[in-house]
Amino acid sequence: MKDYLIRGASMDGGIRFFACNTTMLVEEARSIHDCYPVSIAALGRLLTAGCMMGTMLKSEKDRLTIQINGRGPAGSIVVTSDHTGNVKGYIHNPQVELMQKENGKLDVGRAVGVDGTLTVIKDLGLKEPYMGQVPLTTGEVGDDLTSYFAASEQTPTAVGLGVFVEVDGRVSAAGGFILQVLPEADDSTVSKIEQNLTRLASVTDMLKNDRDVESIIKEILGDIPYQIYENMDIRYICDCSRERIERALISMGEKEINDMIIEQNMAEVVCHFCNRKYQFDKEDLSQMLEKAKA
Image (tube, rainbow, N blue to C red; front, side):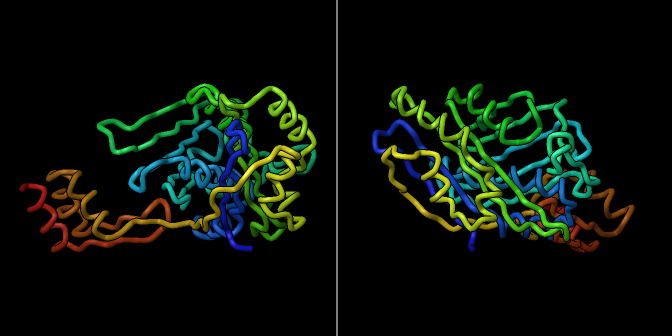
């Protein structure tokens, strides 16, 4: 099944929802970064959230960045997305040794840690980007995003995220949902949804049993009338390029570029998001030096 995302709302406008299947793009991230199971479980959850939160942006030029650093062995995790739900991301330590809970599930919370923060940065084309930050509560990603929405956006939100990793390390199921209660919602609607969420199976269990994301939303909303506004394909896409890397090197200034020429006669830059390597020889650096001077 291809990766895709749906978004919609209840007919009375009191609930809005997002849900997506991200199995293929999370598996691609695992392959790019050579992630061990608990690392891709953490990164995959944040990539899935990034897909959905990106589609909350208004303009095609808007960008969203989510950062988690709980000072656990996984280190920092960074995901960026755009208004179409396409994402890219990386994890500082992609090879965290296996961590499991007593029930045998991957212990993402221990790998991520809780001695830190979750930060959401929205670049909306203004002078300064919007930034919201909350302390980590569990390190499980979904719980921490729920705290973010409540504290920074004052929106009651249910977040469900999941990544299932096979014994061979391959990601066979990944996806999630975000459901938000808006001011128009009445108490009976909220009560129904709360009851349905308590009975809901895990996202990965449902996806592994060939449930699509539409059926997940149907199970959460029950008999509450709703409509799906949009169904879109989503992908793991890195937009790095030689030109962008060159501009970044020039922005470092004359001294840094001159040091590269003197000490190495070249520079190699590796993109964090896709591991693509860009090499610049002495002539390239000399041209950058002249541009930096200008």
